[in-house]
Length: 439
Ligand code: URA
Image 1 (spheres, protein in one colour):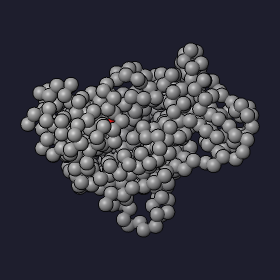
Image 2 (image 1 turned 180 degrees about the horizontal axis):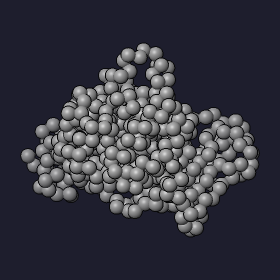
Image 3 (image 1 turned 45 degrees about the vertical axis):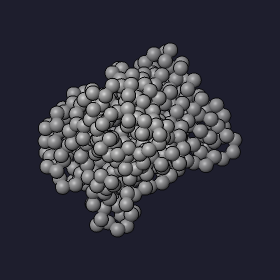
Image 4 (image 1 turned 90 degrees about the vertical axis):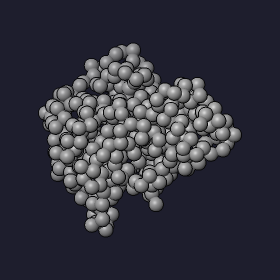
């Protein structure tokens, strides 16, 4: 095979065969195919798309470029979740122990990611000593022994995706649905779960700005998973305003623990209950419940009576973290400046733009623009209002946690841009737009 022929074929809008895709991925990963030819093929894919069988072949080739985790020693059926990334999205911190509290083992590899705030790994690292760098053997042993493990991805998980993603990042080829779908799914497939719940965000604070493109991406990932023999379900959830109130790292972890204690913001709690519900349904634990509300009541009970919190505490301890932080939230990292933003008008909240709140958090230092950039765990924004809320002039709408005056000034501008007002009642935003089940 010659890579130039593969590039020309895709340039001419012809579908590639499975063996051509596999050959390309193998030879690019091993360094035989140079970046300029791989970039050219990526651009041809970006412009001309891929058929379903091509996305499946690309996913499998990238998944098989490294280790395929074998979770069968933990239980006969494992489940995983993935969020396409949103502002204030700390769902994994709640949902993983919540599902594990139903004796459904969870072995999850998470990322740090680039963006306005850290990823799940950064948030969990607010517990001093917590070890996210587990080798495969320890990862599997902890999952077997404790039923819940949350660690970083090993270098060997879909390395072809890591290499191709870095090239896409610098060649304007990230925003391609088949490339995004196969990139995400290659890591999920390599991570070994039998059932996968996808949370695809739609809105100004998400990768996909509108519900239609989020639905298209979700459907594509569901189809890939089903073709590879996985049980799949995807939700399309709103990301026009932040999820919950807190956007940052330590403040999001605190909000997650409050939710595990049976409190937390209403929208975030409801979001977690729905994701946990879908995970439990996949795991088969839902089959003995016929009434949807009964399942939900049971999940809510596990939040309210401390069972989910106790699983979370156990996980922190098992991975070397200091569990006293779970009991005493005042130990969490704190910012030196607390600045309150008040409502500029009496009326209704028209918008709390997730993208502008994300910019505020990034300006404060809560996220990273480049890999390996150090982030400030203590800073962030707590937004007290939701679209549709009635508000009086002078009431607190947000609190900024900052460590630098200059960064604070920038964040204030973003928060003020984010929150807009109306003198007429405004409809609330839905939490979910759709659910797509794999057939
Ligand atoms: N996240 C991924 O893992 N891959 C993409 O291509 C986009 C988002």
